[in-house]
Length: 311
Image (cartoon, rainbow, N blue to C red; front, side):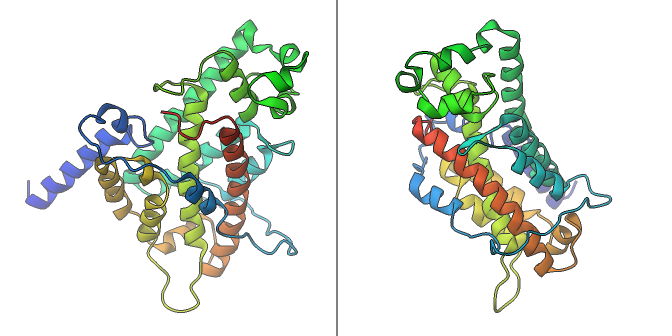
């Protein structure tokens, strides 16, 4: 086997080993005593990133997104799930939220085997929340509708009146806010130690969503002068401004190796069935707007309950 092939094999093995440690908590937890290069996340800076780009002019009729023949990932399905996830004025329904992630996983898998390693860890996170929801449905404790609406629960229990609004349809894992309220009241959330609570798992997905949002936002940008930038560089920049803040040096290097293998821009045209950058910008701008609203609602729910730094 030649030197180049050996090097490629070594990189692939490394990424396979680190794929499951992608969304913070894995490598950062086990290697903390060895790798002290952890950079504390600037929460305000990241939240500004989520709102840094305005969507298309609100006065314009949004483009109709249709199914793209021959593609596993469907941008129209993604947008439909994101819009369906909105609940009340400030909540997010978990079922369509997780379905949105199912479609984003297909998007990541389409980018090649290196990035699909990362998507496997995201699938693990969505499975955790789905399993918690199933277990809760089988337990009598899941029927907390009367408790949450009784007496002064809105003011005395974690989650406040937003939790009451979110849980109007009952179900512990019906929405983001109902899950937060339930896990806080059942003592499932640990603010000092790593657990597999739904809230901690949601936080990891939430951080990854900002990375993908920023990548798609950059991909949608059309420079007034000069050539369009390479998607690989755009994805790396998006990662450096978001998820890398939560990762050790070792994980950051492995992630950036995966981004090198991203396809060229023409691939993204075909992926969403557009002909040029102008059409791609229209489609991705709508996607970014839909992701942004879900991100903001989740960010507010987590922040209100002090959950932006769960270990």
